Image (cartoon, rainbow, N blue to C red):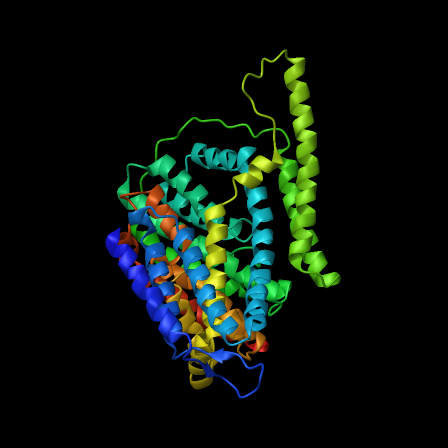
Length: 470
C-alpha cells in the first residue's frame, strides 16, 4: 500500500510539472491541442493498454472487464480536462466528451432493450425448450456439429452472438459432454458460426450496430454480407467435419414447457426491431427511439402477464407455490451490465485518445499510406487480439473517406476476425469457461489456419460479389 501511494504521488507530481508544455495543432484561437507527443498523451496510451491487458486477463484474475476501462476513461478525460482548462479551452473538452457520451448513450439504451428482450425470452424458457428439442432428437455427433453451427449462424443476427454461442454450447455439452474431441470441435464451430452470423445483420454484433447507428451503412445493405459471412463459416466447418467423431450420443428424455406468453414475447421482439428500422429509415430518427418504444410493448405485455399470473395463483388458493410473476424490471436488472459498462469505458477511452490526436495519426497511416482494403483487412486481424468494439469505434472515429463497399469490408473483418483466436470474441471467451478443459485457447489455436481460410475466402467473396458497392 505504501509503494502504491508513492507511485501515485510520483505520477501526479510528474503530471503537474508537465501540464504547461502544450502544443497547438493550429494557430487559431479555438484550435484543439495536439497532445500526441506530450507526456499526458503517452500516459493515456499506457493507461489504455494496461486496462486492456487486465480485460484480456479477466479469465485468470476474475476482475470484471468493465472496471479497468471505466477507470482508464475517467483518468484520461481528467488529464485532458485539466490541460484544456489550464489553457482557457475547457468548453472544447466538454463538447468533445459530451459528443462521445451521446454516442455511447444511444448504443447503450439500444443494447439494453435488446438484452431485456433476450432475458425475458430466457425467463419464459424459450431457449431451454429449443435446447431440449435438439437433445431429444437423437442426432449423430456430426449432424449435431452442423446443426448447432448453422443455428448459431442464423440465430446470432437477431440475438447477440454471446447468447447464441452459450445456448448452442449448452446443447453440445448436454449430448456429448464426455467426448472431449467433439465438444472442442463443436465449440470452435459455434464460435465461428455465431461471429459470422452476427456480421451481416445490424443487430448481430455491437460493431454492426455501431456502423448502422452512425449512418455509414443503411439497414438493408448489411445483408450484402450474407454470402461472404456464410463462406467464413462453411469453409472451416467443412474441413473440421472430417475430424468430428461419427458416434451416436445417448438420447436424453427431458421435457421443458415454455411459460405463458413466450411466443408473444418473440413476436413483440420482432415488432420492436421493425419499429427501430422504421423509425430510422422512414422518419429519420435514431434507431434507439424505436427500440425504447418497443420496450414499452414488453412493459405493457409484462403488466398483462403479471396480472394474469397473480390471478391464476389466487384461483388455485396459492397452490402455485413460490412462482414469481413476470416483472419486466427484473429482466432489465438482469441485462449484461458488465458488458454495457465495459462499452462505456471503451467508447470514452478511445474517444479520449482520438481527441488527443492519436486516431488522426493512425488514420493517416492506415487510410492515407495504405490502401483501404489493406487497412480494413488489418483491422480484422487486430480484432483477433483486441476486442472488436474499440477497434471499430476507432475506425468510426477516424471516419476515413471510403465507399460503401469498404465500410462493409471493415464491418465484415471486424466481425469475423475475432474467430481467429478464442480470445478474439466474447463468444470464444465465454465458451472457454462453459466448456472448461474441453474447449481451450490451444484447442482453438490448432484450427486457426483453417479458420483463416474462411477469413480469406469471405474477403475475396465480398470483393467479388459486392463489387458494385466499390
